[in-house]
Length: 333
Image 1 (cartoon, helix red, strand yellow):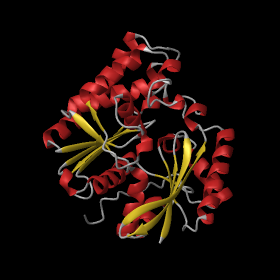
Image 2 (image 1 turned 30 degrees about the vertical axis):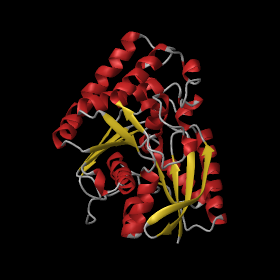
Image 3 (image 1 turned 90 degrees about the vertical axis):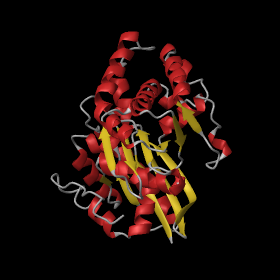
């Protein structure tokens, strides 16, 4: 069976086409279309009409690509930038009417559950009680669990792009006062979540986001070209050194560092602060980098539980302002 997932994120529309063999989504084609929503969306969060037009074009091309590869209708979802936009319903409706793709948004807690599922399947049961951290552009997702799906999830407004805009706008490099203010906010927001994770005492902690991947590379981990099966870890001590180094540099010099891409250079410091603070408050000394995240989680959930759950999650969002996705935990573990 050939399936595909379409992820509309802050910077790009990503398509992953897989063959579902023996319960494993084996990738056969991946593609990306840059949309730069985060750069074009102002403080109000409203997605401009021009950006919506480019987004429609990217989604349409992704759908055509999926068909060329013989995949079923995409499991299509949008993350924080679209989910938080005041004109979210209008954006989703325009995409549905002009492309035929039923794009939906997922609550942050559902994103955390699906990302955890991807991490659990990659890490396996030998990982034991598992904590998961995912630093996105608009939010931080945290989850903990002993089984297939997490026992505890949280989604916090601590995304790297969001915090960069809030604390470092116009500062390059940022002032010491701004860095301290950001660290205070992250500590305050994470206090209760961190206490729960610390109390649970996870055996293994994973980082699943592009932010963690770039920070691990900066900390000395193997580059991505070595493949997904190369073991990669990031210690709290190394992350602190990365954080302090990034704080001293302007954006242009950060972009020249190993692992730091130019589009993400500006938000790399905020990501490092969130990551280090999360690890410190939860008592985690090392995170293992996990290449599977929400896209793989969506595919796995569909493969393991069938299509009914996705129909429930995605129904109504593009046409009814009051409609919200339902929790996934209703399914048996």
